[in-house]
Every structure is written in structure tokens, then in C-alpha cells.
Image (cartoon, rainbow, N blue to C red; front, side, top):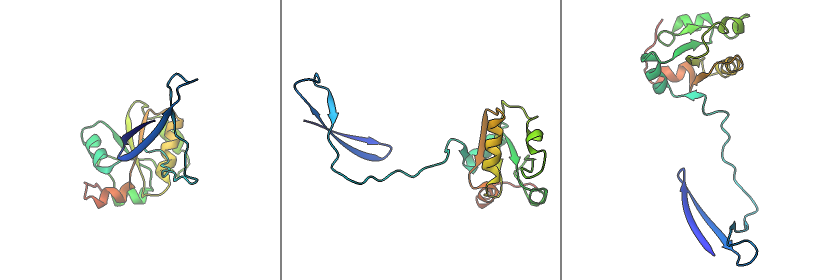
Length: 151
């Protein structure tokens, strides 16, 4: 019987395997589970799409990304990320308006923390955009960190 301890992503895993002398050539097999219940890890919709406000700020200030505000004209006028372009995702023609943007640019899309940004990210991905990120926490998350805002 062989036992091993492995640390993966901060989790301590203890594995027990049995090597049978006959029939499997010494191949290790996991020991049978003695637990009748399992605890699943929390499901994250698509963590690769989210970008933290501070990471977004670095990209935007370096000119390595463009910000897209998908809120209303009124919300945009009250304050937005520096240099952000307004494409109100609830307006008719949103898809045709954004379809004219270059596809090989990194975009940081944000809203007020609702469902507009995730929907816009999905739309842009469906149009063939290569690198579209959703600002984690939206505009409120940006403001909470005291990051620059334009009016």
C-alpha cells in the first residue's frame, strides 16, 4: 500500500492507492471512498472573463485596453472610467454599433454591477472579439477603490 500527500491550490489531498501483485503490473489504483457525501466546489461562471479594477486600470493607463461603458447616457454623464466609450447595451443597434470595433483589441466592459456587462461580454464574444473582460464589481467597484473617474 502506498500513501501520498499532495498540496494542490492550498488544499491538502491525501491519497491512498493499492498496488496489486497480479494482473495490473503494479499499477496504482485509488482506494475506495468511504464517504457517502461530497462537497462540490463553488461554481464560477467564467473567471477568465473577470478583471479586477486595479488590473483594468493598469491595462487602460498603459493603452493596452479600451473601456466600454454599457450603461445609459445619464449614468455615463454622471461619471465613467477615463477614456471610456459609451455603447448603451439596452439601445437598439447596440450589436451593430459594437460590431464595427476592431476585434484584436482588449476591451474592459462595465456596467453598474448588474447584468448588462455580462450580456455585452457574451455578445462581443459571439461577434468574434478575441479578448473581452468584464470589470469585476462594475463602476461601483471602481469607485469604491477611489480610482479616477471622468464626467
